[in-house]
Amino acid sequence: MVPAAFRSRITGGNQGPSNTLPSAKPPNRTPKTAISDLLPYCTAELPLTQDQVIGLSDIAGNIKEVMLLALHARVDEGVARNLVRAVGQNTAKGIVDFFRDEFEVGAF
Image 1 (tube, helix red, strand yellow):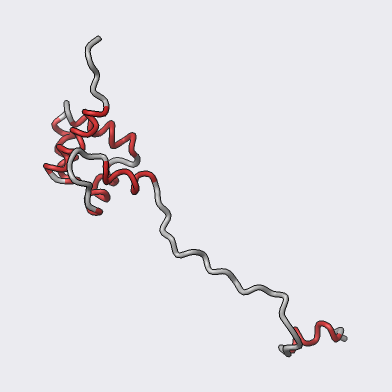
Image 2: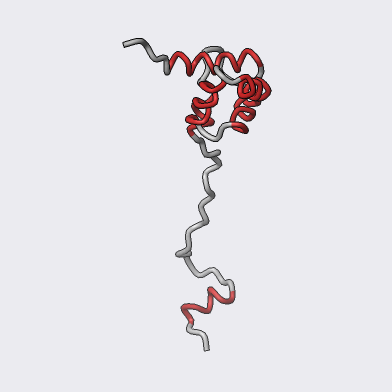
């Protein structure tokens, strides 16, 4: 036999306020990452477009890799070609210039 206090829950009767809370919907947010937030601005030119960010993130997984790629592109034509294929000629130059300016080593 089912006790009376639980009978309404089993049979579906509504005998007062429910103690259950409605399920909360998770917020509809796209998580942001440092690479998607900062990468568009790692250039001496206009910010990168979404397509350029995707192209660049396909060949470099994080900001450190983008920096190393840009610095290496200054001395290696093959790396420079890969960067140009990913983002285009002018944007590649802007990325290389940005990191060159950030990591310029002066004479002592």
